[in-house]
Length: 129
Ligand SMILES: CC(C)(COP(=O)(O)OP(=O)(O)OC[C@H]1O[C@@H](n2cnc3c(N)ncnc32)[C@H](O)[C@@H]1OP(=O)(O)O)[C@@H](O)C(=O)NCCC(=O)NCCS
Image (cartoon, rainbow, N blue to C red; front, side, top):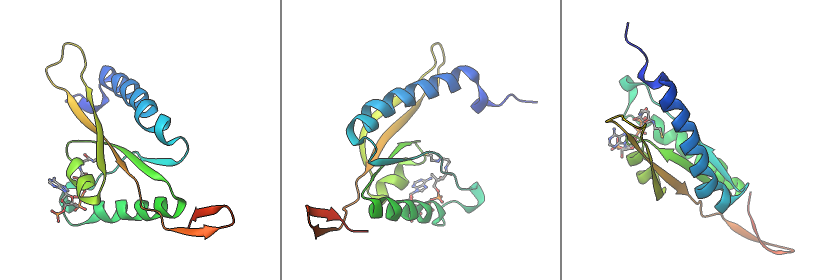
């Protein structure tokens, strides 16, 4: 039986370290508590390119918009086109590369900043729910 490549301990440890560090620098330091992070998104290969990924993301985007929050994601190479077409912008790249291995993965740290509808409140403009 083949070993699970995605369960490789060195890769998993490096993944956690790199994404934790990058999240702090690229997302937490900029948006504080005013952001949510999209963690895992996958569509079964049989059902890909039928709009499921887009529909799920649009649901999250609407939820974030209502709360006036940004959305952050570390996009895989496969996810990149989806987030591009939804209006996410690329902020930086994070390469995960275990020493001595020939393969690596390039993640795109992407951000979506919903245009929050604002209304006039006692203390000036406030997000509309
Ligand atoms: C990324 C993923 C979740 C997309 O799910 P999906 O349900 O197929 O996405 P959708 O059908 O809603 O695609 C919406 C748009 O995204 C873009 N897109 C999605 N998959 C694409 C692909 N493989 N190549 C190019 N563009 C793609 C297209 O613009 C597409 O619109 P179109 O089909 O009208 O051209 C799916 O490919 C997947 O599960 N990949 C493996 C796991 C992964 O990498 N997840 C991302 C983690 S950040």
